Amino acid sequence: MSQVKNIVNKQRQNPEMDDIDTLYDELQDRLMGYPDSLQDTYQRYHTDEDIAFAESVMTMIDGEMNLYEKETFYDTHDLWGLDEVGILKKALAIVGEIERDVKAGRKNPARVKTNIDDIQELHQDDFDHWLGDWDGDGIANIDDPNPLIPGDTVPIDSAELTPQIKSLIEQKNAYVPALKSVMKKLIDNGLPIMVKGRIKTMYSTLGKLIRKRFPFTVKVAEKEGEPYTTGLTDIAGCMAVVDSQEKVDQIVKRILAGELGQVWEHEDKYEHPADGYRAHHFILVVDEKTPVEIQVKTKRMSMISAASHYPYKNGNLNAELLLELTDLAWKADKGDEKAGEALEPYLSDLDRLQEDLTIRENPTDEVSELQDSFRETIKKLALAFSLGKFPEEHRTEALELF
Image 1 (cartoon, rainbow, N blue to C red):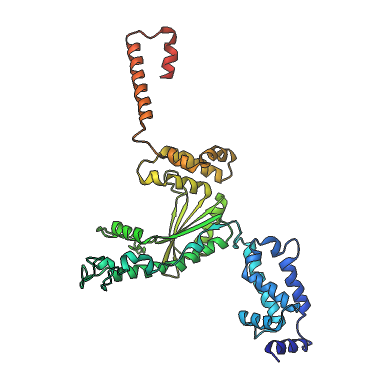
Image 2 (cartoon, helix red, strand yellow; image 1 turned 135 degrees about the vertical axis):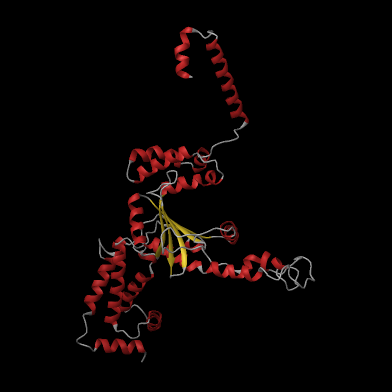
C-alpha cells in the first residue's frame, strides 16, 4: 500500500479529527465565494502559484487526483508529514496571507508594466571583444599587443586588464538579485503602474569610475559620525511610476519604514524641487551590502523628466518652460483637473515636448531670416518715429504693439 493511502486511511479512522468538510467549505468560500473572494478581488488570481496550490488541495480532497498525481503533489509541496486536515489548514494559512496582502495593496495588479524579466546576469561571452583570444596565442584581446596577429607571448602590461574585467562582470552580477528583490516588492505592493529597472552597462560604469573616482577629491561627512561612501551607489537602479501624488506618498512611507531595505539616503525633491522636477530618490542597502537606487515619481513627472533629459544634458534646457510644466503636473497629481487639462497637450507628443524644452542657439535659416527681417523693421519704425515721419493716426497703436 502506498504512503498516500496509508495517510488517508488513518485520517478516515480518526473520529476526533477536525471536520474536513468545514475546512474545505471555508477554503472554497474564501477562494471563490462571491462577491468578496480572492477570485473577485485579486487580479493575479489565475497566475499565482500559491492560489494554484490551494485549488489543488481542493482537487485532491474531491478525489480528482489519481495515485501518481497525489504522490507527485505530496513530493512537490513536502506534505508527507500532514494529514488532510493539516493540508487544508496549510492552504487556509496561505490564503490568509494572500488576503492580507491584497487588502494592504501589496499584491501585484495585472496592469503593472515592468522589465524585471529582461534583467539578466552578464556572461564573459558577451565581451568577446575584450576577453576573447581572436589570434589564439593565449593572450586575451584586451591585453594582446596585436589581437589579430598570432605569436605574442607577453601582454601589453604586467598589470593585465583581463582579471579586472572578469571581476567587474562578477561584481555587477551580484547586483541582479538585489535589484530584482526591490523591484518585486515594488510590483507586489500594487501601487505603481510601471516599475522599470536597469544595471549600468560595463562602459557606463567604467566611465563613471573615471569621472567620479579618478580625480583627487576630499570627502567629509556633513555631520560628525555620519557614514558615507566613496563607492558608486547607482550601479543598480529602478523607477516606480504611479498615477497620483497620494500613491507616491504611500510608497515613500513604506520605503522609509524599511520594507524594501535599509534606507541609506533619501533625496526629497518635493521639498527641494530641481527646476520644478519633483520626485523621491532613495539609495537602499539590500542584504546589508548591495546599494540599489530607487526613484519614485508620478507618470506626469516621469514624462516631463524624460523629455527634458537630453536638453538638460546638452546644456540648452528651457528651464522656464520646464518649471511651468512641472508646476502644472504637481497640481494635476494632487487632483487639479484644470491643471491636468492644460498639461495634456504637451504630454500627448513627447518628441515635440523635447523640442519645446530645447533652447535653440542656432536657429534654422528660415527662422534666422525672419529674425533679421523683424530687426530691420523695428529699426525703420524707430527711425520714422525719430524723424516725425510716422503717420500720426497710427502712432498710439504702433507704440502699443512695439
